[in-house]
Each structure stands twice: as structure tokens, then as C-alpha cells.
Length: 106
Image 1 (cartoon, rainbow, N blue to C red):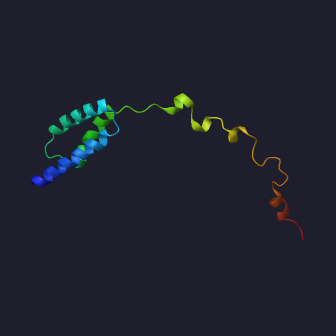
Image 2 (image 1 turned 180 degrees about the vertical axis):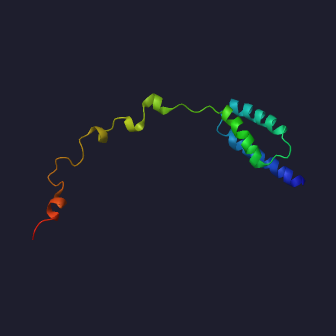
Image 3 (image 1 turned 90 degrees about the horizontal axis):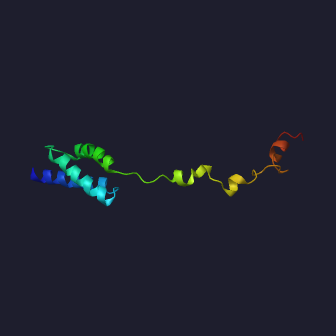
């Protein structure tokens, strides 16, 4: 019985490490303290229940990175040589040659 309890605590520690990896250092410490406090009051806790309990706490401590669209605009809306240039294949005499000769009478 003692081995399964330590196995669960090792798995729960792994979950804590995974969930805190994306947090900044100051927020990581606050998250781990809040997570340990939340886990302390739950008896017989397994890894799945711990994960479901810790995800909302992790989201509360996570600060998303800055959005690049605000600074530079969406990539598909930026100008480029290909988008600003003339259409490819326009006004080319070879355009449609296969279609013109497809129904040719022999």
C-alpha cells in the first residue's frame, strides 16, 4: 500500500512540474504553493483527479504571451512580393493552349 501512495505522489509531482513549466518563475512559485494547498485537503487523491483539480489553478496563474497580430498585423494581411506583384500567368499566349487544341478536328 505504501508503494502505491508514493507512486501517486511521484505522479502528482510530475503533474505539478508539467503544469508549472509554462509559467514565469514568480508565478510558478505561487502556483506550486496554491496547488499543494489544494491537494492537501483531498484524501485518496489519484493522478487523474489531481490533474482535474490543478488545471484551473494553473490557468489562474498563467499569463499568455503578447499577441504578434497587435504589433505587426496578421501574416496573411501583410504585403509581400508575391501578393503585390502581377498575377502569375496573366496575358500569356501559352495560357489555355491545351484547351484550345483539345477538340481540334483531325
